[in-house]
Amino acid sequence: MFSKPSRREFLRVTAGTGIGFWIGSRPAWSQSRSANSRLNIGVIGVAGQGEHDTNQMISENIVALCDVDERRAAPARQRFPKAKFYTDFRRLLDQKDIDAVLVATPDHTHAVAGVAALKSGRHLYCEKPLAHTVHEVHALMEAARKADRVTQMGTQIHGGTNYRRVVELIRTGAIGQVREVHVWVERAWGGEDLPKETAPVPEGLHYDLWLGPAPERPYHPGVIPANWRKWWDWGGGTLADMGCHYIDLAFWALDLPQPAVIEAEGPPPHPENCPAWLIVRYEFPAAAGQAPVKLIWYHGGKRPPHFAEGKLPPFGGDGLLFVGEKGMMLADYDRHILLPQEQYRDFKRPDPFIPDSIGHYREWIEACKGSGKTLCHFDYSGPLTITVLLGNVAYRSGRRIEWDARRLRIPNAPEAERFLSQPYRKGWTL
Image (cartoon, rainbow, N blue to C red; front, top):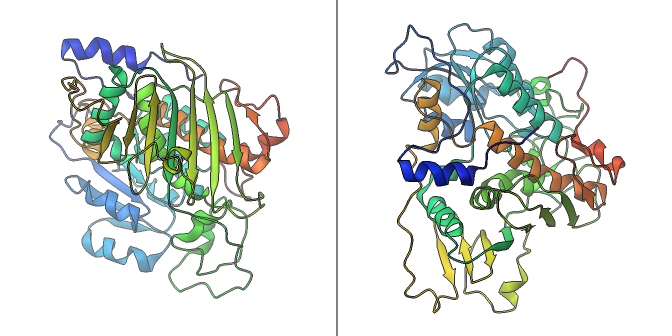
């Protein structure tokens, strides 16, 4: 289902010819409109991350806005007074002049909004994680393939220079064959019980629409607008929030397939609450000339043992550690360090061969108009998101799971498959 030409092979061939190595959906753009025309974009979720994303797209026409919270939508409505406003994304999709859609809602409504947008024939930019559950991610991938629209997931750092230099170093063997990667994030979304008390729904918040397909729950101000990430009904904790950003670098550099085995440890699993800390161990099979790889994720104050053992220099914040046969590399969004530093003091770096991005958002805009391709299209970001979400599946099930990526099954622990999806409330479907 996810078999595709190796990105490493494509990169190797195209780097020598000067051809861009962009891979993605074939764009569709009206033949009656020139590439210099502006896209008509509809925005679903206009505050918070949606505001940031919209700011990166103001070169285009923002013709429709949708948000379930009229109070938080007020600044966007003032900024784009000509854009039509909706509280239900389904009504936004009825607007005929929209070419492309941005979805920046909470995780639990990514799929219902995204699949509907694709089925309506619109190009789609969707924030990370691509969806709330593994089955929803698969549904988005399938909808994108059938619609043949341009897609991009909101892993903005993928467009940065530092990630490119890291990928070049890994792929040219600067630290030798990599068999182990550690990824850690200090943030902790989780560890709190759902509020028991109730409160009146504020005026202007369409709470039933905010719930969307999620289970019926009473409103509480401690959940909206951001803390929903702490509970399984709407989010996936720190792993779902940040995994797509950091695991992305390992996925890209090592051309990883989906993992074959996943196991996790953390606090005792809770039916409602995401964990305050978590360690997930992924085992990736050999693929595309790359040896098998073990990737370990940590969050909530947990870090690789290499720090406590004094094997690494001080490195504050979140990051990754690539462990190779000849050396190691620490990296984050903006930095990378080859280790041991003395060994690499006179190291000659390869000439850059991965072209600079024209910009993460600009990739999507231009691809929608027929120029270039997106790098974080759903055939790339879908398997990445599934990998991230499988860490939560292993944790919640309490099992070491063996993943059959082609059939979307867990043959050694079928009881864990209930965490691959979430039942929808009546009236909501994909």
